[in-house]
Length: 248
Length: 280
Image (cartoon, rainbow over the protein chains, first blue to last red):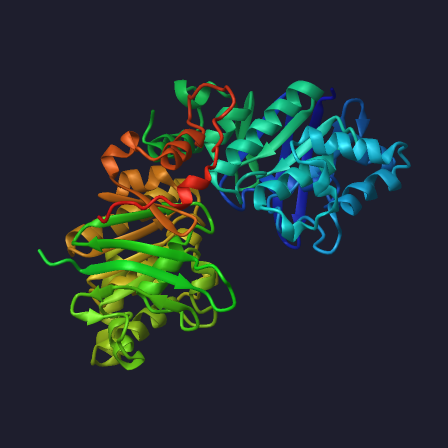
């Protein structure tokens, strides 16, 4: 279990500053949510942490080590990302076996077959699915493969970018249950982007509300139902979500 | 009161597929708000498109499919051109893709109006600006001259609503009208649509995957599963759903303030594929 510490993270795309001095502390083993409207920079934070975007300034640490100073292989072993769209994030011409094996091969891990079988079991897919291709799986099954691909490298931190928003509620329930179970079993630290406060309320211990590339407020989960947001935008967002839910 | 829409045993099969995408769907629509709910691939959007007769390659069969006095099964395309956009119109999911990116918003609204109503350009502009005001756009003259990329998602969707309601249709089909929008503006857009639909007495078919949304904004709900109608319910009695699929969908939804135990998961039964919802 490792904490994530973000200090003064800024990034500029062209003339636009997309993230303004983001500072967040995610505790070890915590599920931390990022919410906000589209374009508020939630996903960009994950992309900065994972260094898919690398033109940022500031300091991001996982445990004691700065992500900038880590070797690529160490970084990949320490954190993995699950993307929003399971249709777009798996290679269409690679079988599930190829997809899962690639990370093991690159990281020179032994017992590849055993690890793949365990990963498939962990995400609740039949082992025979290793020889299938993504188009032979449903959306929920694909997202399970994406999760298996992330956890097969035994990371400490999982970055989840709207892991269920492309899925139906019925399938979303399966994937959320899976994520909760894996966190209990393996002690992952989750940093999860979501636009759905109900999902955040179900999964997260704390969450940050973002607007225009700034963190407006960091709140515990209870703040959704019991109030406690002090910033206007945070109150508006929670209010709108509660109203939308036709509260309780 | 005569129904606006009367559909009996509608089946739709896409070209090149052995199985029909929709089978034996029957319902009627009066001046009310009807929700169609189901998972992706359940055929709900296909039904919406079939009503608009937008599926030119698919094979449509039905015992009856009428919109007011128009027989949708046998109407010629020439007849449909008069109906579509004037007497029935459709609001699509994402304004980013459904507005023409190289034409000004207002121009597109005026064009839609002039396609169906004989009038001068100045008149059409006037009507378009009024309509923009009705969808609560604060500075309609300015928005009239903006391009779609210059407006936000919520505003784009209101432009779509303005365009679709300007010809005073009797039937509006809204296909996931707010799923591309942020939760903060979703309600606002829905309320505007709802207000106009009620004021003008329009029949609304709201296609959505979101049970909460139809609960709040519809009178009646059809539940679809794998191309079949499994249940028809009054929106306010959604909690009393009988079919295990509907119950499963309701239970799978995480709720704010809900218990954090594992969410219940659908246990899909083959018998659901034989089930027939009663004719609404």
